[in-house]
Length: 380
Image (tube, rainbow, N blue to C red; front, side, top):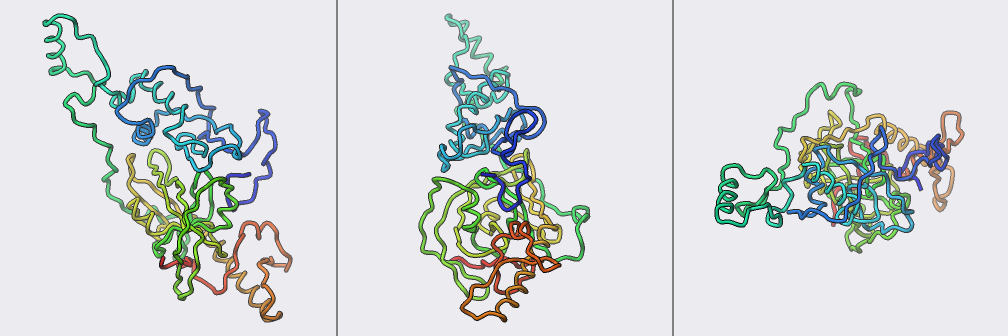
């Protein structure tokens, strides 16, 4: 199954490319030449942190050779586990053998030495008292650069960037002005590229719609039951089907942050695939600007940025309005007992199947402005 959600297939899914491989799938190459083969090791240098922490803290340096996608078929993996190094499901980052080998390779090249456990290393100190004194004197006057915790103090965890978050007029260029468009972004959720995600400061919950969840094909994901319900600005409430925790990649390297998000699963029509609300925005310390259609947040590597797609936002708005008009015509011509159709006619009156696919799930009962499109305002 394609890992992208709510965009048409490019027509090459499943077809062989020039190199005889398969297009699509979960190839995590970052573009350019194929990644170098990471050697395997039998012995590993003791570390002060687990390899997952080492990767999280040092990824922004750009020193890691990323592996190709996981070859195990998706239906044979444990899709409840996510690896940040592979950016795919199947095992956790800490369980990743390839990452463990890559960290060891970097250490042997003289990098990541601050994570080497100095207490477990035994440099030659000599057998005589004079040799021991010389070694002690050397550690005070010219400490080994790769030794850590010589004083017993733990290495500090890298801090988030304290650079000021600002928005400039130059960042608003290229947009149509004036506008009331919503911030609509594309993110990777649990390794799947998901389009049409609304960033909504007015939502007190992070929402994943069930139709989107079904298309993501996340086998084995645990959904925690909940008695909570969602309430909109009209006062109507919708029962949730549970809460599921999924990793979301925000920004791009080196200014990237991966946040575990507790999504409320909702089975109702929506022009969006998901909604990122205040819980996640507050956790990542995000600042939004609807004027610039930007979201900025601090990361270890600097200020991360999410850019809203103005064209996408307007397409959603227009498609939803057309759907409202069609439903109004249908409801006046048919009895109230009949189910209204969600087909969206084009200019000549015929139905465009590709448009329906792109606008899947749009069945709204009232018009909405593109700046306040969220159906969620409170979580009870």
